[in-house]
Image 1 (cartoon, one colour):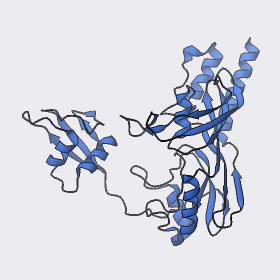
Image 2 (cartoon, one colour):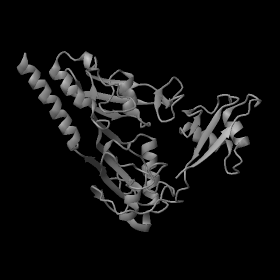
Image 3 (tube, rainbow, N blue to C red):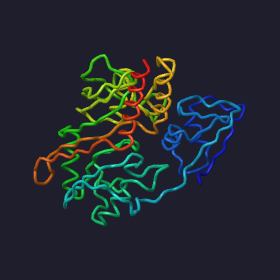
Length: 332
């Protein structure tokens, strides 16, 4: 259980930055100002019972603050016997199909049941430390609720070369996504720099001075009036890139809790559409799948390409939309 640190600012407390005041008054030696700042950004602070996520605000005289200190975690991930859907494996790399719902590497709130825990059990001690203690073997990641093809390294040499490929964007990475609505341009390119959201640390946002980010997309199937199925190809690989870019052009991914912007029932022309819309809005994850990953083998140089069809939940979502479209056609 996390420890709760409670502090009250006296009525005569001088104005100053909140993170500095907490660091000066916490009484906990290990709590540096940078640590407190990160805790605030992670949503671990309440001010008079309400979340406060800005470490730079001024401390308020008379306010009551509660800072949650997460419990200490193990220094390194532990091996766990978790089934893996392996597409390819040799002495240097392992390619697998990650299911939706699996976190790639341990982090606060998800220290067990991750892909790293599973890889440590599958590969044994040989994987430990490759690429770092906390993320052994990991050269890229998929969001927890994104499914699809991933590659991990099993040797230091493979890790270094794969890391170079990802940094140089020297791979073929194609995704399929179900989005809300029909883009005006059926095929296109989104060139919009990305950075961390100014007030919500868990989100990314398009911003003028962000990191260079380009997504190419093409329409695979129209599913009017609800949305369409897209193929998205990454020219760069930023955090949440496809999710943010599609939302940026007004067509967020179905089921995306951060960026999705689902259609409203008032936008639907009839009761049949509204009934289907309610089920689509209830889809429990972003409908995004890493379908294809192509790259040169980091040791042999052989051209490799791996592809996985849409998972069952996305197939069922398309079927639901198809059935709703058919019913609307019959009812007219």
